Image (spheres, rainbow, N blue to C red):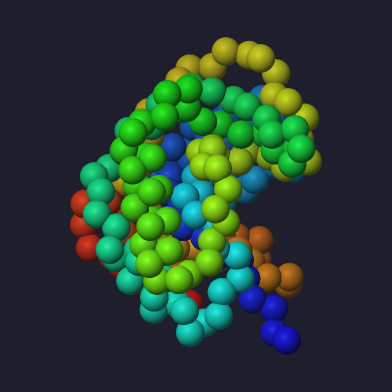
Length: 177
């Protein structure tokens, strides 16, 4: 059986937001996530057959939402998974609505996905201890790009690959698989 990469939908930061997130990584210890891989997962799909890609892209194309302002003002830690993360104290209702619309579309198309409780965050480091309780200057991220991405397979360069992308409020752009 040929290994298949994990697929996921995510909000994809712009370069300014990535740079600000990378600065936050200086406060955490662990296996740091490469800045080009930083993202906020909306739905984790796991391995999917290639035949499902047109359906997954159509789900993305069906997403209709305005850009979402996220104020990154919090560092946190998931102890069980040893993940240090950045996020927001106040969850914008637009983010919950976007997640619900995306998972409803996946359910309608019978695409399996991880239905765990949505705890929006940007993973900064794995195999990490809790970040120190140090203040930092909060910053805003106008999250306006949603993507369908895949994780690398063993032997590939360690970067996520965007398969399809949509600027919130606009039409989808399809990437190369």
